[in-house]
Length: 130
Image (cartoon, rainbow, N blue to C red; front, side):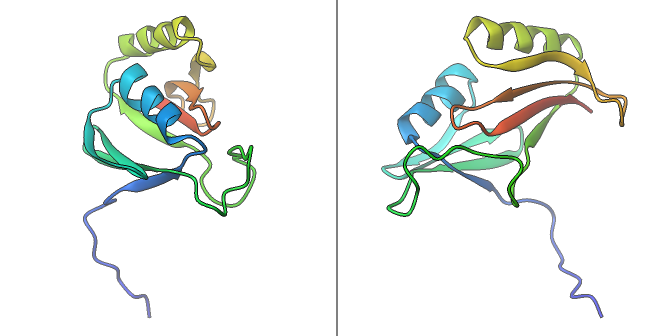
């Protein structure tokens, strides 16, 4: 018999960072996400109604470690876009800031347009049409 977990959705998503200051600069100063809370080893920001925690490295974090979508765990994070003109704007702004991105592409499986980009640790994000 299934447990039947009763939930209204995700509370937060936590990302481990190799450099907390660099990650804050990317998510807050470059992408413009509002900060909910900051402490020496963590900061929280919102993307729409979703909460993300970015956590500092620990003593167990390997030096020079980079995110890989090929290991078991997180593959990527996709945020909803409701206005297709924002895709071109965001792709251009990412280019201007020197952030790797795909430009506007179409997902061949779902037929939706998106822009993919990576944070400083290599975590892949998509800005994806609803």
